[in-house]
Each structure stands twice: as C-alpha cells, then as structure tokens.
Length: 397
Image (cartoon, rainbow, N blue to C red; front, side, top):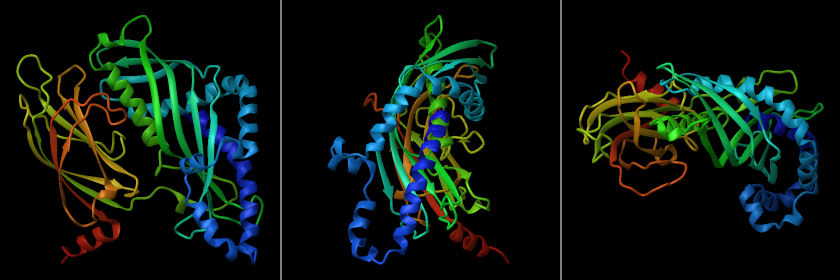
C-alpha cells in the first residue's frame, strides 16, 4: 500500500503542475464566467460518473500511456519498492496488531509480476471556496505478490502466514493546496484513499492449514483491513510540503465528539457448545488501539445488558462511521466474533440523541451470509466542537 501511495505521488506531482498552471491562468481569464455553469456541472462528476458516460477511447491519452509504461518498468519498481514497503508498513501493522499477537513482521515481500492499472481520473470542485485543486485517480490491482508475515502469538506460537491473491480497487484523492504564484503553483500535496471499493485477499499458513487454529484467520484479516482503512483512508490524509511554509491547517483535526451509550444486546448467536456465549463489545470510529473502546464481559448470556457510556473523537462526520463488533470471550484463546454493525455519522442530527437497534452481520466488507446473529441497542449523540464548548460553559460557575 505504501508503494501505491509513493507511485501515485510521483505521477500526481507532474499532473498537478499542469493542472495548477492551467487553473491559475483560467482564474485570470475574463471568459471564465461564460463557462461557469458547464464547468460546475462537470466538476461535480466522480470517477464513477465519468466511466459511465465516456467510453475508453475518450479517456486522456496519457492514462493509456501511463499504464503501458508502468507495465514495462514494473519489474524494477517491484524490486525497489519492497524495502520501502517493509519499512513503512511494519510500524503501521504494529499499531493495529490485536492483543493475541505479540508481533507481525514481513519475512518475504515481493509485489509479483502484475502491475496496477489506472482506470479513471477526475477533478473535484472545492465546495468550501478554498483555493486548491482536488484530483481523484481510480486504480485497480489484481496482483500475484509473494508476501509472508511472521506472526508471534502471546502463547509463544510462531506462524508464517502467506498473503495471496490480492484484489484491490479504490479511488485515491490528491489535494494540491494552497495555490501559489511561484512555481510549481501549489504549496503542498495531501493524499488519501477516498474510497476503497474492493480489497480481497486469501491467507494461508505456510506448511499448514489456517482453519486449524480457531479465530486466527479472522484476527489477521481484521488487522490488515483495519490498517488499510485507518492509516490512509479519508479523512486521514498524508501531507507533503512542496514549498516552504506552515501547512498545519491542512492536517486532520477534531470537529466534534460522539457520545455513545451501549445499552444491550438481544438474541445473540451462541458460540459455545456448553453453556452460553460470554459477550463483550468493541466500538470505534478509527480502529487504533488507543481509540477503541471495550465493554465489560457479560458471562453466560445471550441478552446482555451493558449500559456503558463511551466518547469518541470525530474528524469528519460526513464520511466517518461508528463500528460495533460483538465477541464471545474465550479466555486465553482468541475471542470469536459474533457479529458486527455500523452507524453512519452523517445520519445523526447534531445535538440530538438517536436511539437505534442494529442487526449484526458477519462481515461489513462482504455480506457472506444472511444468518441472523442478533442485535445491539445504542443511544447516539454527536456534538460539534462549538456546541460542546457551549455545553461545558453552561455548567461552569
């Protein structure tokens, strides 16, 4: 994933120079007002929209040129990127490693013989009126990498896990901001994974069968998906300074808080052969261990009552969501997932409490089955930073 970002950065800087210069000249043009309506309409188009109305032959020639040359240089890129990925991704995985693992390290890492392909591009108009250029690039990669993770568990077992058959499709967002009069016409570039459409892969224990160890496959897959989702997925963004200056205003900042009351669970699936499950819940907006909240465990109960309160930092209510995962506590063994659910923060009205019952599913990424797994009851309330400050002042003497 770090390679994908590095590759996109190199390409996007060159594209950004062209786009920034053209946009800067257009600002000075007296004819811009005549085209405002048409430009605004096209600016709101997403990559998906453009793919629907434009056949492949109408795509920018440089996109085809880029993919053709990327195929040619891929063997060299593959070799050069391996060490870079290892040094950048291992620290990220460490942040998301579940409690049952003591470490996750790469023992082998090559990206295979299949190069990624860029399948779409669009320019997004800034709604806030801030001077900047936002570009979105759609990329697809059905790779055949050779990736082996050495995983050490807390009980002293070491396992080599092979990650195979990676399939990825996503849209990367690049923001060139602020615009400047001096070359290259923008001060910094921020990049993010705007939309993850598909991330598929298979796991295999080298010399063994991963299903022989209960909960291992789910824990590893969950770690990889969490790391990708949180480390570079919008609103998280990485900022690269191009011209000297202070760009701290571009960094991700809190805009409010989410108050959550985890009330109860109902009709949870029983994961135990003897007795009933011992359920507990894990809640988060961003899956960093320091930001995840864990409820108490209710022993031998399929209708647990928690009545616990949690608070989460919100950075972008329009795109972020609250995830709830309910597990069966298995003691020293890996906890078994009962089910999960999510709530889009954009569906919550600021300052008002929303009472919801959420049906649990097996997987939020791919709906593998429709089996009923129970429900969880939540009470939710979003407060903006401004509203929270006013709320706190009202209680001060």
